[in-house]
Image (tube, rainbow, N blue to C red; front, side, top):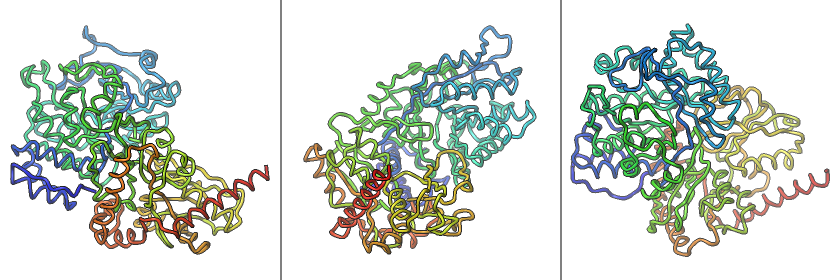
Length: 635
């Protein structure tokens, strides 16, 4: 939810745009042009920073990655490219798979593969490339091949886009990079890269990938011959596709590196003002794309640092060797070490979050003296954060689901937030429970068991679980074993990442939070005929509310931080009262919910813990302990 703060602008034309942004109204092409043409760079940047904070808190993501460009030999001759050469050129190179593998390390999380369109390499070479990387480095996720390369494979090897992607996916391809998009303008394509695919083929490749569960990224090359109108139109086409597929992870504005292309003088780089404004406008226009990347390789580290307060929330990564931009004259260092990236993000006043290829947090690196507050990214937590404004600038926010918060709490990197009951129990010596939580009495519709069987028929069956919060999983276990006497069932975790989930292999599936709400709005889950609301089941059994999460703070937290967090929570809960439908409508819209549905849903919750909720917590833990005791006796 956007901050409630009032922004002031030197350019009055920005005021109606800010009102549209705050109200959740989508910006138009005309709005985008106003933003680009405005002289109030700081005003545009502040709007974008507020939008980025609403999505990512103070988090800025980076990944330990390696860029591989297996060859610079290419059948195309694009005017803006100083990387590609023809076969037989003195500058030509082509790597073996063993040479590629020699550049990777087990501690990497991502390998990013793009390169020239080689005229002779067989299809099996590309398949084996991906397969061997995943075989020898199973923890390294493969982000490989632009839409231009996928389309080249289609034509060269006489396969469909879908066949190409399926075969690569089968051996380990996880996501697609966003390269080859350039600017979605037929005028520019004809002038600068008339041999290359245009917007139609680019989107066809990415739509096909998204249909297969392969998420992707999207770039925009700016600062050459494009107009501001063409930049905005490019963004609008991305936004339209994202509405349809929801498959883009990030948008990456790429500053044109003139090199010796002849398009611009070799020293005519984009200005820092143009770079920052393009980042900011991207964040404001692309309301449905999760992340905006400040690609330091092309921006330079200095400009990328400032961009983190202009709407960007991702720095890409350590990259390693990157030749395409540098062959065109990029002036950033060839490699920024992990510690340098962390330092840059700290300097921007943000929180460095090391991520995987899908933006799942791996590690958090708080600056000494700061306290990181977890922001639970579910609709049911909107009242906690809508008006949460800490007066202490040493308190930072990071969006984490409860299970991830629990992991970081144990590691000592997170100081406060909504914690699952089980995580709080494990960390009770280090954390103190506040008088706030997420509780419900009766039906809630966001912790649902979809089943092919009635309760008694689940004995010996396979149950898929989304283990984002251990509380809901343990609640299901209690209902099965204690309320219905069901034994010998098996829990199997669902992998909600890039692949389409095959629910048919399960006898029942537990969905929680926003995913459960989305399924309700869609009318159910496949062929599962029985739907059980676990909160409703608990209340019918125990006549007690159910507490899904409790707010907790570290006991060794500075007193002024603790006071600021409590004051922020209290202010937000009071200010949110009566406004639930309004405050949560944008979040709810993404789930297919109407404003009335959102209001009804949020009004079902209790956010302050009283005696009934504390009794419910005690009963929940008593029952879990009895299961543990019975299992020990049976063993």
